[in-house]
Structure formats: C-alpha cells, structure tokens
Image (cartoon, rainbow, N blue to C red; front, top):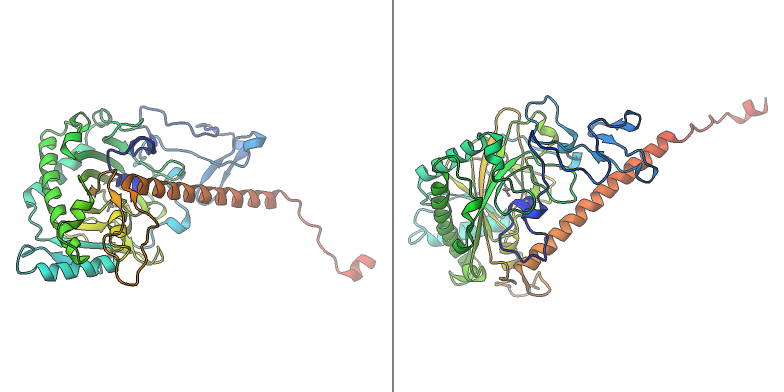
Length: 435
Ligand SMILES: O=C(O)CCC(=O)C(=O)O
C-alpha cells in the first residue's frame, strides 16, 4: 500500500521498483536515518537556515545546490514531542479538511445476511450503487467470527507495543518482503506518513515466507493465518456479488484474478502532536481488486468522491469491514465502479489501528474491462498485465511527486530572489525631483 505502497501485491517481476524496495528506511532510535542526497546534518549551518511556517529548510551552502531544500528526516515517529517535525508536515492542500471524528454515514452499510439466498439481488444492487457512487461500502453480518476479529486486533496492538528490538527483527527496509517498518512512503516523496506498519504476504499459500511473519506476540501467527483465510473466503464471496453487479457470471472477477494474491497490512497510527498538519497515510487509491479494511472506533479513514475537494470521515462500526474498490476493479468494470479515493488522518488524543487486507490479481493477470456497456469506449487502450498497470501507476505517482517538489523549489527560489533584491528606489513625484 503506501501509498499505493501499502496496497501493493506480492510476486512482482523484478524489473519493477519492487514494493519492498520502494520503502524508504526510517530508523528507530538506535539507528541513524538514511542521508538525503543533499547535505544533511543535525547541526545545520545556521547562517543558511531559514524557517517558514511549515518547514525548517537547510541549505547546502554549496552554490550548485544552494536552492535545494533538505528536509530533516525523523529517525522514528517522534511521538513525545510537542511540535511536529518538518518531515511530517504536509503542504496546505494535502492537510486534513475534516476532523477524524466528524463521522459521516454517506458510505453505505450493507448487511450480508441472506447473501446466498433471499437477499442476494438486493445486496447486489446495493453493492453496485455503492461502487458507482463511492467505490466504498461497509459490510456487516459478514460471517467472520467476532472473536477472531477481536483477537486479531488485540494481538496487532500488542505487536506495536513490543520493544523496538523485537519489531526490528522483522525490519523490512532494504528490500525485504513482509515485516515491520516505520512511516513507509513513496520514493521521491519528501513527506513522511505518521504511521507504523507490520505486513505479511498471505496468498498464494505456496509463496508464504513464514520467516517474515513476526513470531511475537505469542499466538499471533496462528491468528493471522486464520484471519487471512477467513478474509480470503469473504473476499471471494464479495467478488461474486460484484461480478453479478457488473452483469457477469459469478466467477468472472475471481477468474480475472487468476491466482489471487492477498497481503495484509496492519497500520498503527500513534497519537500525533499536530494532527492538523499531517496525514497517517496520504491520499491514494489501492491498485488491487478490493481491499477489506477493519478499523477500530477511533476514526480516521476519509474518502472523497470529487477529486479531493470535499472529504468525509467514514463512520467506524465495530466488527464491520470497509470494502474499497481498487484500480483493478475499476478497470475491469470499465470505469463504471469507482476506485476508492481515500486517506487516513491522525489525532492528538488516541492512537488508532486499522488492518487492511488487499486482494489483488496475480502479477501476470490480464487487466482489461470485462463489462463494456453499449456506446462506451474501453478505458484502457490495450490489455496489460497487473504488473504493468502497477508500474504505470507508480510512474505517474513519482512524476507527480517530482513535479510538486520542483514547483515548491521554484517558489522558494523566487521568494528568496525577491527578498535578496535591493529595495527599489522610492519613486518621487516629478515636482519634487525637479525642485
Ligand atoms: O487506516 C486507514 O483507515 C486506511 C488504510 C489504508 O488506506 C491502507 O492501508 O491502504
């Protein structure tokens, strides 16, 4: 997923930036952070330091790099500090617009009771309407055991409470697939997410690497395994309904996924000193088919359906799963169903936990609309593999991040030039000049 990152599938061919090596390492207490490409120092040259409202920017002091801002990176989530470090501060246009606990009931809540018989048609129609409107809905009465859900959430919280060295045994930086990492973010992005994650690749079973599944807290592996299995079953059920909602045979979406991948990402968002300036997880769509998100009751999942102009905070419901349609689902429906545009915000009062289960097609599965309605063009120009779809998404995201960074640097350069320019001579009225 970050990103998009957080939601990334396993088993990509290695030509791509792989999901794990696009995580940028941010070290916990005892380690030093990776150096930025430009000069980085804990003791910046004070003569060249400039503070604006959002960032403390250090300049390299070398003429060729003088204009390149170096944002100081935090070595770990600095939860005990009164102000937010610059590396977490987002541009104004990216900051939260709605409070984490101003809940909206706009996202439909659908009971799956009777999904296999009496209520199937009704459920199918409600799912279709939700996907056309938001690309998001919540499901209750889904059949996943409440005790299993509670245990999964409890053990996940316990994992994040482990001492740093226990979590670091599963440190994911440097290209490892699955494990723990602080504040993963897209390469090329300067701003960090305010979160920790633990993630594991659970399907296909033959690709599981149990060596990357944390063995603490005790009992967690077994619960994780069971949870993954139940969520795979629920996802297949939902894909069946979604296929029917597209007017296709029940198995159509599962078949299009070939051998479905599943990846689970547990997000932990600690309390944040200045939540209005940052995000737990930046705005994104998930690349896969669907994502099932379990969240606690704190609130923080936000969605937009007008390109980011307005946002809502999804009402948390105990034991419910939020279902997000991903890019793959969006393409397969030829754009009829929206890919959920969402982000996670944090708060200053309590930490928050969410568990995202990403259901993705196999890397070489073909991405091409399955249902094209009369009069419609296909939204893709040619069939591509899921790997290629993901590569294009990453390239777009990186390009956007690059352009944004450049625009900021240009703006700053202009500002500095204006400040450095000698004040223009005051213009005197003609009669005074001639006097
Ligand atoms: O924590 C949340 O509410 C959102 C998580 C999410 O979007 C993700 O993991 O991709």
